[in-house]
Amino acid sequence: MAMVVLAGCATQPPGLPDDPVLSTGPGTLPGQRIPAGPLRAITPGQVNSFPIASTEPPKELWDRIRRGFSMPDLQNELVTDREQWYASRPDYIQRMTERSSKYLFHIVEELERRQMPTELALLPFIESAFNPQAVSSAKAAGMWQFMPATGKYFALKQNDFRDDRRDVLASTRAALDYLQKLHGMFGDWHLALAAYNWGEGSVGRAIAKNQKAGLGTTYDELNMPAETRLYVPKLQAVKNIVANPNTFSTELPLIENHPYFQQVQITRDIDVALAARLADVEIDVFKALNPSARRPVILASGTPQILLPWDNALVFQRNFDAYNQGQYASWTAWTAPSTMNATEAARHTGMNESDLRSMNNIPPRMLIKAGSTLIVPRTAQMNNDVSSHVADNAQVSLAPEITTRRTTVRARKGESVDSIASRYGVAAANVANWNNVNAQTAFKRGQQIVLHLPITARAMASDVIKKPAPSRGKTAVQPVRRNTGKAVVKSRRK
Image (cartoon, rainbow, N blue to C red; front, top):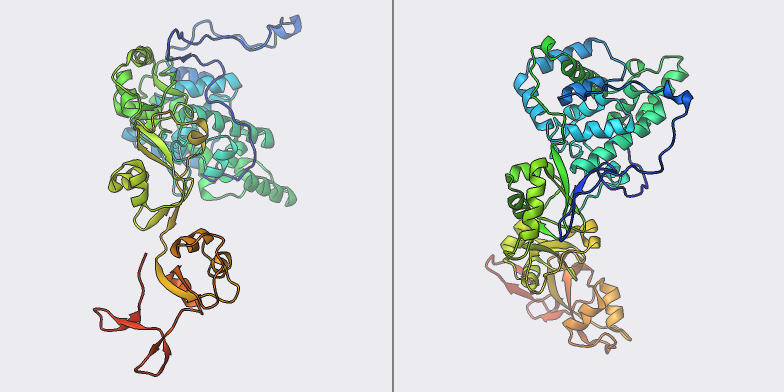
């Protein structure tokens, strides 16, 4: 799904403002629902403007969704084509709808709170088949398929420990924020959906082009890519099937009009496997509700709440508070103090190099750049929970290892450690270290200086010391013999 790059947005918490949250820790009680702001009296003139609500809530969520349909219907051949496509694949519909049962209640609640059409609750069927781990070829991710830049604009954190584009609450909040913004721009839900798929700039230009040509500017009348042309018909087809499943010989699974999950506040870093065990849920169920976790540990300072099946939330709360079998997390974060290879990083953290590479996705022949955050085993020396700064900004930055060769050059008149370092593009501290001198040392003219230069840069060393080659009677680089039998420069790899 194409998204435009936007800039600047204040961080917003995921979920509904009045969602109940269970807390962990001594003396904690479930959160209470408290209306925000003062109560205001309804004037007589307002009484007749409010619709009459049913006194009996719908027993199943599909009925509740149907009651909230309010977008104009789209009727064309593409809709009919998509209806037939979905109806001819009952297994596919079954998988999608069963997967959606974990998330639909929350989405519908949020749509109703914002007074938005409940058809939009069906949009993840089109975007990702309700798979929060879905990733498109264009790198859009999550149930609502956010591109990285658009996700950042809508405050969806993306770092080495979590990707909020996959987070159920955060991504739903961001998607509905974006859809509301688009509807405000275009004043039409079909155009808003086209912009969600194609980009608001593209839809705006298509509208301007039609206006200039004296043509209409509805969804059907705009010239757009095939994917966007089919986007709203797909949603309309799913809407029609949900509205009348019998017409399409389709059976929708029962989804009760009740929350599937509840938020639980965590106060300590905790392993994903332990969290699932304390909640008494299968690990796959836990991951489906907490898909933003990219590592085997959840950092409380970055993800202070987890989602659990409604009946398991209290189980987790009690087990978490009673847990006495050691630390909650067996993993923590370690920040590389300088650029180093995996061997050095493994030595610093006490890990096996192969395990460190595997856990942190470090390929061979790559350096770990300074400031990179790696996940490492929690030890007595690294036993604190990870800070919010690291939890929100952790990244692993890699650079190719550069093969160097030991080279000897002559100092020019008046040269120092700094001038040598500047001339050959290396760090002054390295020059001092290679030559066992301090950083303020001045060299004598002609003094031999040891350098370790990248192979590609060695040709730049115009002052490489040359030794006489007796057999040719003139200066040349002294060769040595290798197994190939060819003359090569005498050097040593570092």
